[in-house]
Amino acid sequence: MRIGISTSVIQRGQTGIAQYIFALVRAFLTHSGEHEFVLFTLKDDLELFDFAKGKMRIVAVSERFRPPIRNIFWHQTVLPRLLREQQIEVLHVPSYRRLLWSGPCPLVGTIHDLAPFHLGNKYDWARMFYGRVIARRLAQRQDEIIAISHNTARDIARFFGVDRARISVIYNGLEHNRFFPGSREQAQAEIAQRYKLQAPFFLYVSRLEHPAKNHIRLISAFNHFKSKTQSDWMLVLGGSDWHGADVIRAAVRQSPFERDVRLLGFVADADLPNLYRAAEVFVYPSLYEGFGMPPVEAMACGCPVICSNRGSLGEVVDDAAVILNPENVDSMADQLLLLANNADVREQLRAAGLKRARRFDWNRTAIDTLSVYSRVGQSPENFSALSRQKIRH
Image: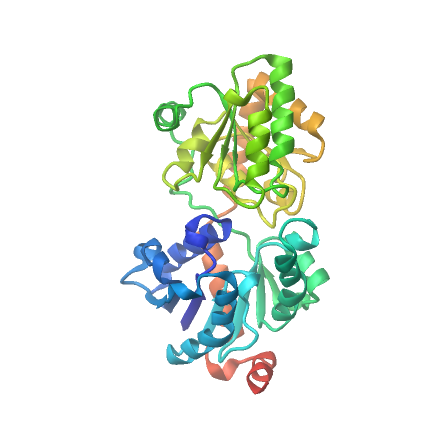
């Protein structure tokens, strides 16, 4: 089967969707003898897919189509023509923001979350309108939707009105050759040298986005923790600037413990596993997630996790993390204190997290995703009635 994958939403590799695409494409490499994969990739992102060269066809897309509105236009007008030229049999668009209205082949889309329906101020008004109204119509026209959690699947059926029979739940995977316990001592030594982090620290890896990622309450909880303990523990925030980053940076400057709060910026893939291994505790207080990869990655590296109960997070971490209400700053501070002071609890969470992380594997995710492709159309003759209707109209 010749499978097309749109990769233009990776935003230079610095988003969760980018990590989803990279990991899925890597897992597909072992299936490149059975299927032909064609990646549609913006020109400046080509080097990010060097690992697929020789095994997958990569079609370069002009950089003039990088801005969001132009990129949407490209998907709706140019991509269908390219699908015909490349004789694509199934197209996968791994984000609801770029789903096609119609195409010459069956269409599969991945929806990671429907945050605009849960967080009213997550985006500007235009993106909120697109996410709530336009994307709903587009989702209804896909042959099948992949949801990355049962929570997201319920949201898709509820808010987008997509028939549950056309939604497949396929969990994100985990690259176990990258995320594993390793040596904590070696990791701490490398992180101390790389980032000058030597004191014990709480870690939060997420783009600096306010209010959705909830950094402000975490900083407040950390202030309470420091006031109570006067300890040398630090709070380390890894992630690139996003909407509202200036608010987060201002909160750090205003903290009486500013010198113990570190902003690392975007953390390179090569550094991330050792950062998890070096941290004493990973904290993930996000207000909403469709899956939440960082807590699982931290667990796989042997780092105990404190996690929000919002969106799919409780479903994903199950009982392998300390679960909290992310809007309760006092409770968050109490959990920071508990884990900082109790090595036994940290050890119990490490063991539970390692066991939980083994459930997630990108090879399994790839196989399940390929099953969706096969189901929606191994050949043009297998188009669903929905696909034929899209072509006629």
